[in-house]
Length: 355
Length: 250
Image (cartoon, rainbow over all chains, first blue to last red; front, side):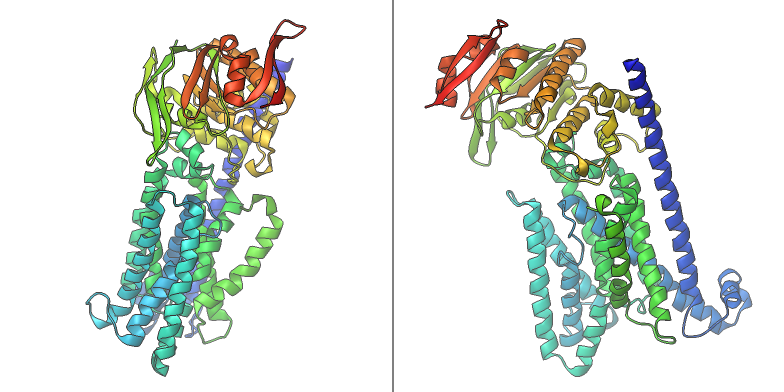
């Protein structure tokens, strides 16, 4: 009788697990659908009030519409809409894996100083006209930002390889970097001309309006390169969250996994920031929303992080166009304003499934 | 049946020598071996060294093994990590390391079997963060067992369990090791558990082996005095089993 009850309980376990997986797949599918809807709305909205039918015609039969409409949809709105998707996804995945490998809910490209370093690099170009790497003037700002972001990421990365350095120390180092680069940035702003100051402030607010097709392709390509790397280590990355000793006891080379992931994360975080400026919130909150929805099994957590980040930024892009008709507000500002209330609701309703 | 022997095994953290010249006789599968010693004696380090998680001098000899070094499984002390995973997922995670994303029915059936053997099937869909220390320890045991180890190194697996669960888990491990021919080394603080459940005992202090052999020959008043600095007796209880009675600390 006991054996039978145990067998039944066992079968129930299997069934419940399958149901759990199904629920997560449905959630991920819903996120995909929401993302498509959001991107569509994002492309339909803009200062030039084209009716939806015109937008759709321009999308699917571009040769039949006026040059002006085609340019607005294909060369202005679409890069912005897709940039929101690729940047949101990249920052969110970067944040998700930073939180995973550093076992810290506060880890994100923003809190580890990578965004602050990028802002400082950009300001160097905008204020002092200093190119860290000799390139054409129009690329100076993003290249500066990228190099400084990579420098910060590499610093974090090499610090994490030192013996005796704990993950808590890494987060502390990151916070210290934030303060250092912010101070350096303030100094530059203090010294800057009014025009340069305005440019720096606008840059640090984060904006998608600078999106172009090459930028979309580059951020997209880094994402396409990074995701399979993480996917290959899905079980191992999930196990890291059980603690280093436990992960090692599962046969995982914890040190190597952490290094590989950190390198990839550095690229994922540095590229978008150098193109669109500081968008702090997505990298922190995207992964937390994903975690509350599907848990931390990376087979679901990874795609959910991609989708939550992309959706968050895409919706924000829509909202930034709608708040004041005719004007596009800086997305870095709106992300936090839109995201925070939503995040609070999630935290308070899902306390047990949050970190 | 698997057997394990250590020859001049050591381990260093940087320049600090944590373990040196550990020799054991041949430890055969099918029984429990207690590893005892004071705090910071090097028990966990010994386990990590055997499992290949730290490097160091000496040789770990394995014989009659089907899986080789892969068959050695170390179960660390629980650190209370709070991943947003259910018990079921955390055990699946242990079983699936290094394999594909796809989860087969047979793998799930194995998890169900292990959870119900440990009588924690009712916890399967609780979050790890909701468990008590003792429950987490049982989940850790499930994570280890689902890997079907030939040599299992358990680092204080009963430290957070209530009395009933301690007896149940040790009895279960003794039965399982005999059935599966598994060699189980258990770091223990309760010497009466060692006397009752473990055929052999290794005493570690200050990073080296002070004594090893059949448990009743190793756990003596003299050993307790020199290793644990306590005045104690080892006497037969009314059931005839030897028990440690501690009188005072020295």
